[in-house]
Image (cartoon, rainbow, N blue to C red):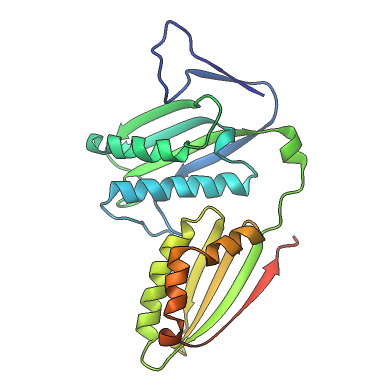
Length: 235
């Protein structure tokens, strides 16, 4: 499906291939991803390492949405701010490709003076090729969860802080497609969470994460009532 080439006349590198020939499959183009959350807010302001982790997590989410994963990436394009940040970028990139078994993709990396989003230090886009058999197969139906919580008297602000911190970590989970927390305008003790997961298994794994377990231990302290509903996307 994809053949990688590294001519002897060009410098050899374990991090990238010089050329990739696509003989079959379907192309997936992922726009340049920056360290933005679901609301378009910058994550990890001034912290390149934190931003790099979030950027690659966003790339994974976009790939999943198109039925692809890291193994299908054939080219990666990177724009970053500050040459001193290059080692941290390389570390995050190695982690991103850690489970990849095939040759490394073609690659372009450019240092820039700045990016479109204010405070963004890194932008990464990729091109992937999905085998025809996988592209034609029906994808797993996403799972949507709607949760409604009521804070105990005097605990509204504490619950908001806990939910906001938990949301940042949740959005970096591999199976999380979206995770948005709301607080009532007319009733400040009422919260709602709208979340979407790739599969039921991903949702189950979410409840076992350390940050969710930590929140569960504070449930009696912060919440007077909670209920949630799970839906399957059908169209």
